[in-house]
Amino acid sequence: MILFAQKILVEGVARDTAKTTNYVHITVNDTLRKYKDMEKKTGLNRGDEYVKLARNKDYVTNTDSLGNYKIYARPTDTLYFQRPHYYSQKYKVEDIVRDKIEVDLLPEPCVPYVSCEQKEPFAFYIFVGEQIAMTFKSDPYYCNVITLDGGAFECTYKINQSLYGNYPSDKINFKAYDHYGRPKFSNFKNVMLFVGEYCGSLYHTKYQFFDVYKTKKGKWASPGDPYKYNKYVKDKTVKAQKIKFDKDVWIDLSEMYKKEKEEYKLPYYKVVGDKAFPLMGTYVDEHIDIKKNTVLKELNIKLDKSKFGH
Image (cartoon, rainbow, N blue to C red; front, side):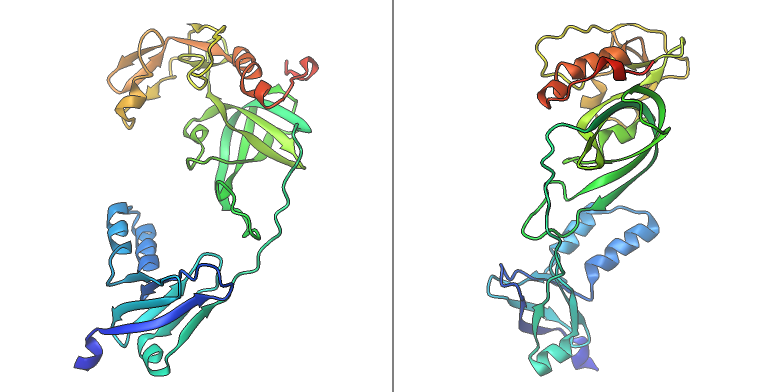
C-alpha cells in the first residue's frame, strides 16, 4: 500500500495518427476538466488558480515533437491523453508501465469547408432590436481550415422598430462573429443593428451597432458623440443635439473601467455618482447616414430609398 501511494516516473509515447506535430496534452486524473466543472457548479471563476494548475507539472505535461513524455504519478492514477479534434484516451499508470502502452490518438472526422463568395448581401436589414437569446456555437471541425473566431454567437432578437429592409417578422435570428469574445452590443437592452443575408444565412455586420434609448417624444436615439463607434472618420458632418430622453434613461458606470468612464462627460452627459444621464445625442436616421457613408460604403452595401421604414 505504501508503494502504491508513492509517485513513480512514467515515461511513454503518445502521438496523433495523422502525423502532424505529435503534441499531445496529458493530465493526471483529468484534473483540469474537474476543476472547470467545480467552477461551474459553485459559480466561482478563479482564472488565476486555473492558470497555475494548468502549469503545474505535477498534474500536466505535453509530449515533444516525437511524442515522448515524462511525468510523475502514482500507479493508481489515470493519465488522460488529449488533443483538439482527436478522440481522447485514458489509461491507468500501472497498466502503462506494465504493458508499455503507446498511445495513438485517432482524429475526429472533419467537414469540408465551403466559403461564401457572395460579396454583396441578397438582403439587408437595419432595426432597433432587443435581445431574446444569444448562444455561442463553435464552428465545425473543418478540414485543413482554421476559422478566425472559432465560432459564432447565434442571436435571436425582437425587432422593436424596422428602420430598413422590412424584415417579414418581429423576431429575427442571425449569427454574430466577434474576434474579441461576446459581442459588445449584447451589453445593451436596445440596440440598432445591421444584418445582411449572405449565401442563405443572416449575419451581423461585424462590430456595427449603436446603443439606443427612447426619447420623451417616443423616438429612438443614441446618446453621446455620434462618432463614438466611428472615431476614425475625418469628415464628421453629423453633430449631436440636445435631446430629452425618458427620465428612466441613464448609464450605469459602477462596473466600468476608468478609461470607459471618460466617454461619459459634459456636454453629452451629466454624471451623478455612478449614473450618467444623457443630455445630447443623435436620432437613428442620422446614424444610418453615418454608416452609409463609412462602413457600409466600404463594404459596397448600397441602401435603397424605397426600403426605409416609416
